[in-house]
Figure 1 (cartoon, rainbow, N blue to C red):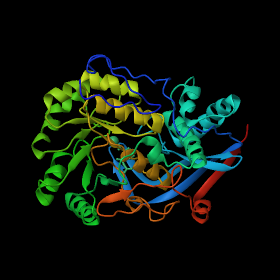
Figure 2: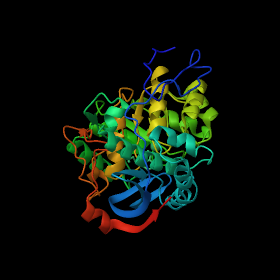
Figure 3: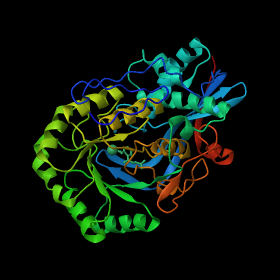
Figure 4: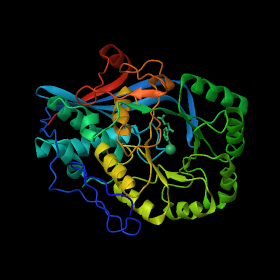
Length: 406
Ligand code: OSB
Ligand code: MG
């Protein structure tokens, strides 16, 4: 078994015994969480915003040109807390989408929190567990409560998470392009901006040649990886093995979300390390994937796994098993981007994440923009998210706003 991780408050991870065969994750009730202040929810605002992308973002599942996001704002007697739901406008990445997320938050999640009374972020996931699925909706609610709690306590998200860095290396996710020259120009632009790692979106018909072209043009020193977003099957393993000579850091989610065994088999057929994204929907799923040998790396997205606290537990679980992790992205606004930077600053996150500068996606964000400095993004230091919404901008991009009261 890999080195023993120190127990972190509230997300103690136990692996029994030799992780690889029987990994279990338990929350240790005897460990008290710090910064724990009860949050009284006076009301919760559900806001939808629409932000144009600077350039269309094409993946194996579709092309996005605007970001339609659901924002959750918890109102307390003396403060507020913000959460961002990463569900997309359409159910193409996972089964959730922004409209269903808003519906489940309004009809099923908030009523449970209101009925419970004052809450802490650490209790939210358990209170919402009877409602099946909808991790992105749950994550947004938990995030708003956590932000309110930490703003009140005067503690930053990074400190609460146990972050050990004040800036994080920034990787960029590059969409599928119409041609190789267009791809090379795009990658060149990102490298000139300072990005330290490049991830190419791939699909059948756009895999080996783009990877070869980028390797040839930018050299062996470039940290390069690919993301298939489930576009292949195990029958494509010979095609995927053609990526082996290019010294990729990893291939992300080549096979369908529920094909854990397929990924384990593929791992025996190719040498490029396999990283799971879509398949890892919880710490329990992460334990299964690790035990099966379905991945060598994990992309951690807080929304996909039901929140930042579960994300933190997965990071600890992976580290205890010797797997590197990195923080994924879902085209977040500054709200989610700041929180992702705090998560990525934790010690288990040893690979550069998809935590790019705000202008990778948005000409104008709803918060002051995150900028690249020497290929890095600064981790916010203020209480809670440490990120403030710009009132003038957010009102301009708001498409709907509803207030839910106890
Ligand atoms: O698979 O990582 C993914 C964006 C939307 C949905 C899924 C994914 C992505 C990205 C973009 O790759 C990551 C980012 O926000 O920079
Ligand atoms: Mg991915």
